[in-house]
Length: 148
Image (cartoon, rainbow, N blue to C red; front, side, top):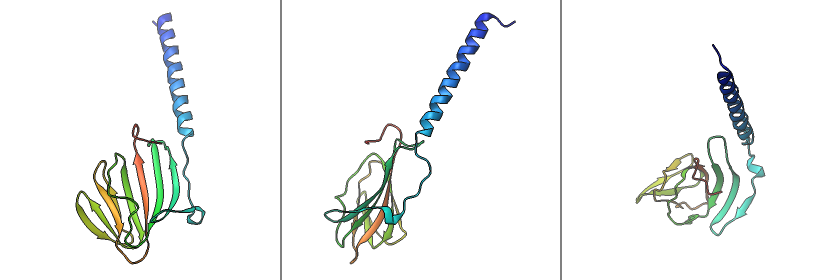
């Protein structure tokens, strides 16, 4: 037999579930939807070694932050010195010839090549060609790691 206590517990559990579902849906709905960014719409901002085009920097449903930009560096240049950071990073060479240094080992790469930088590993990229080198940078910040 169902008691009054059972009914009260059931109603409270149902209400708590509905609140949790509503919160999750509203939180998910506040995250960005699928999108596209046209190359022509990305503003090229000059840097001391070339230029940078910001694509996006936002939170997603699964990441605290997703950052994407496009870096272009002149011959013999690098955007910054070798470094390490907690977020993972993916780079895709669009044009030019670069050398990718990872933990002291260097590899020469051309257009279409992909570089993955694991969390907290020393890495750096330098343009070793005689023309500008451009590469896409995608950084992944899982929950609790974003710097906003």
